[in-house]
Image (spheres, one colour):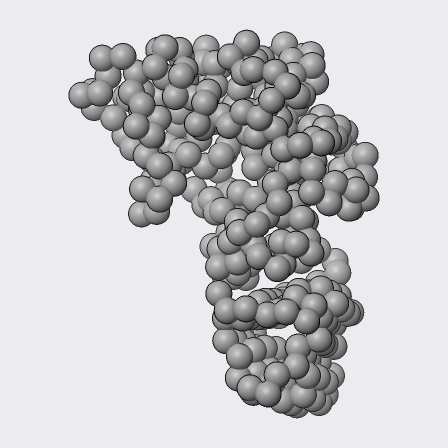
Length: 351
């Protein structure tokens, strides 16, 4: 079976950090987040994955290589962004070759959702596409979709299937995770930008094409903003999000329990720390902090719930609460206590 991961975006909502690191490589618990999708697809028996690329494409290819844990990776570079449907059309030959359904996932949507249940529903209903939805208090900000009692999608945002507007439906938001059949390609135009939510699904619903949907109650997140990126990292540390592979990786130690000495400093768990990170004299890595390879809390400094990227340095006696420090960044400030601030190179801003 094959799958496609959408990874070409600029990560603009991630601000300064997104300029440094493509969103596919933003680390969750020290692991590039696209790997969470790859591990889940491997668990589903996927053997080949297509990945669309644009921003910092060579860095992503260099990080992942041509093979991931037995999955062959096929890259589809976009000279200009093609959109969430246009990118699929660009990979039509690859996705249609097997003449079987394929998964489509976003690189920045980690989840515990059971993809196989969506595939089974898709096959039973002979659907053109099957969307995975979830109930959420945030649903209105993403857009409301509705599915009838048989599992058929009858509402997509403001669009309804013919004569279905007053039908009983279960409502939810689209997770960006789906199963598609190759026959969907006849509905997607070639050689131009095309957004699947704005142009394709509304038309398919209006034309009463068979689109399926399932509702999942399992963990799902969107890491597209700094706030959500920080929250998903905390969900990993708290155990609210359990990935599909052994975590943490060998590079990191997950420290739980009581406060302990660490070198000449201290750790107040829970903390995730790279074996190559450093805590200097009287410095403290406190609850929900993540220290990546080569990072350093210098003398008397403290991190509370902050994420310190690789090869970054926090100056003496600074206290960072709920901050994000980008790679190769030195944090210096006349203000001793800093809260909810992003640092990248010599720039910083509140979030």
